[in-house]
Each structure stands twice: as C-alpha cells, then as structure tokens.
Image (cartoon, rainbow, N blue to C red; front, top):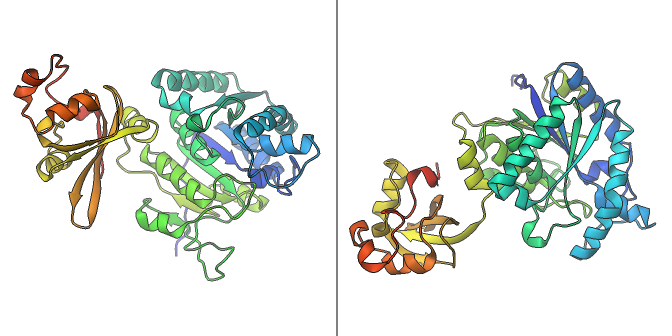
Length: 376
C-alpha cells in the first residue's frame, strides 16, 4: 500500500484533548504537550498559521482544589466554577511552551449558531493571526448552559476550522487514528490510514470514549471530521502521545488517519445552516416533493408537505423527511418562511391558495432553494 501523504497547507487548527493535557487526571502536564508545541512552532517557522483548541480547564480546576480523578458527574454550576478556576491555569501552562504571544478565545454554541457572532469570532481570530499571535480556543464553560454548549472540543475545533477558513484540522488524541474497531478492546482492530468520506459505516465502527475525563471519544472525532471535510478541510487524526508522530506530520507524512476533504464542499452559508443551526421542527413531504428537492433544485412548496412536527417560527431551521421503504429518510434541512401554526393550515395547498387561508403571505414557497441543504 502506498504511503499516504498530507497535502500542503497554510492554516491549521490543532485540537488537543484532556487525555493529553491532563493524562493522569491530576491537572495540567507537559508530558505530551512539548511535541505538540514543537509541531506548532515548526509550522510557524515554515510560514504557516496555527490555531490551537485546547481542553483541560476543568481538570486544571480540579487540581487547583486538590482534587484528582475524572470530572464526570459534575453539575453545570460545578463545571462552570471549575472551568473558571482552571482556564487561567490552562492558558499559563500553554504560554510557557511558546516564545510568541498567546491569546485566549472562549466560545459558546451561541457564538457559532448566530451568524453575526460567528462572523465576529472569525474576524477576531483573523486579527490575532495578523498580529502574529497564537489563538488558544476553548469552550466558555463558565457561562454556557446545557442548551448553549457545543459539548466537546472535537466539534468545537471543526467549527473553528470553518470560521477561520483553515485548510487542515489536526485532532490529537491518545490513539493512532481511526480503527475498524476500538483498539483498546479488540486486538485485531486495524488502523485506517485514509478515509475518503464519512459514511454510516464509519459511524458504526466507533463508540464512546474509554476515558472518564474525556467528553468526546472517537465518535465526536468522526463528527468533527465530517463537519470539516464537508467544508473542504482535510482532517487528520493523530496520536498526540507519540512525539515521533507529530514530527512525521510536520514533514508531511501521515502517521495517523487522513480524512480527505470533500471534492464538492458546501458553501460557507450552507455549511452553517447544516451544522450550526439547530433544527426546531420537522416537515414530512411526499415522494414528488422529495424528488424535486433532490434532483431538480426546486424550492419546497406547501403542496408537497403532508405533516408538520414541532413548534417553530419563521426563520427557524427544520428537517425535511420522506417516508420510504425501510422507514423515514432525511431529504434536506432548510430555513422556513412560515411558522408551524401557519404551515399546519396551508400544508397540501397550492401556492396560489395561500392568500385565501392566511392574512400574511411572505412567500409563495415554504423554503427557497437557496435556503436548503439537500442530502447527497
């Protein structure tokens, strides 16, 4: 099998998880971070730009209070308090490893789902890079509620790669890459050096994290890879506990798993719609409408809707599904021009009849084709 080579890149997001920052679950350690810092410094010497996404604030907060062990079972207020304690310690820990300015950037899911805040975060990171500063990003656990949490830094790193317009996402963990099964449980598991596309079969191979301190696991790394590659960003899963693997990556070699970017990446707006906007409801359509959306680039009309689920308003994102052999299939996701109450009144109607039912007619379609992301 020919060796997998990494395409040249100019801007990367490097994600470092709790398993590397706090390997003994007793606060921050440099045991695995020095090779990662060396990779970042060497990349910068080559004229490349790097953004670091780092976990570890809660672990650092636990250690500051003389506690050790996994940070599981904590309430949201406990996590918020520990993150507030630990975040400055985490930043100071990283700062000691670099001879450059470092900047703290804390984000919540709200910063990613609201387009104006997404753009503001994008501009801030761009300005930091222009100032020859290393942005160090983490989720703002001190203020995030359960509803406004990304929940894991793998997916956060993918969002950051998208908003920063990176061309490479590097996810460092404590395994050598993506395997056909969990290598901690199955000695016959084989590493996949290269993946062309994230499919249902790939998701079936992965499971939750084997470490209590982690909030992700291989499943969230696959989710992150899908988000990044959908936007045209190569993604690498590499073992950050092995300095030789980071050194090889710096030479353009592939010691882990390369998930190749999509050859037809989504536009920035459609990627935001698909991956950042939460779905507020669901529309079931008939087969004719499903075919028109899939193959004709059509807008969704009220005549094709057979059922409305959930309570949502105009401007919310909704899923579009169709009943097919074997169950329900997602057709698309889009931003609706009508709230659920109005849609229940006009579903199945021709567009010309909307004005006979509703006093306000914002559009003759329910979702315009420019506001739709159709499943491939």
